[in-house]
Image 1 (cartoon, one colour):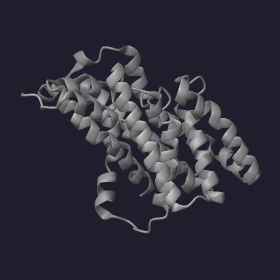
Image 2 (cartoon, helix red, strand yellow):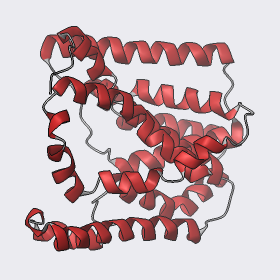
Image 3 (cartoon, one colour):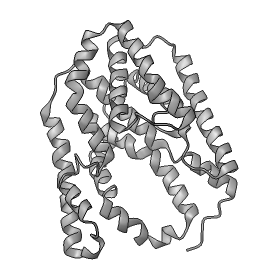
Length: 287
């Protein structure tokens, strides 16, 4: 297959757009925190996540054992496939379930602390969770679970006390943060050939700023339910569980030889698909 005629500068630009998933993750957790900060714990929702994750993990494993056993070459991963929610087989699911389990404690914290106390706590935790990792690439206490808990508390603060800046400032912060992320990513990528940079991480200052501002802007919209989006979103979690499965990842992309033979096409596909992947999960969980 003939490669897509992309120039080197254009490839660098596409590299900068491979991080939309981080924004989608942050938005999903912010929405979860906002929707549940003032509600009671619902075990049914948690059990649904656990059941779907285990079902797809075990089903895919059994299908591979029957039809393609040669691919199943890791005994430890076989065991993990039966307990995917606690084995970090799906990092997003494991971190999310952990956040949901501790959410009653987080809601108690939101209700007990005053606005000023919670604001100071969030600022204090912002330093090691976002500020330091952004500029040093040292995630010494940050993992998915810890970051989700922090975003949950941020969303709870917004739900209880709101934010005071104007729509114009909100828009300017989004534009400025995007500009910093993509211009710096493009410059560093061209100079050093590095694709993964602290500025594009989900806990970077600029990604956090974009997430909060986009969330605030979306929360003010009055569009109601959109049927077409709900229909696509209803199957998004299943798609995530399938394409992120360790066996599928080992066989799916190598099998698509025509795509894999064209790195430019892979870049273009990822750049277009990455921002949508987790945003569909957002609509799925709130629908």
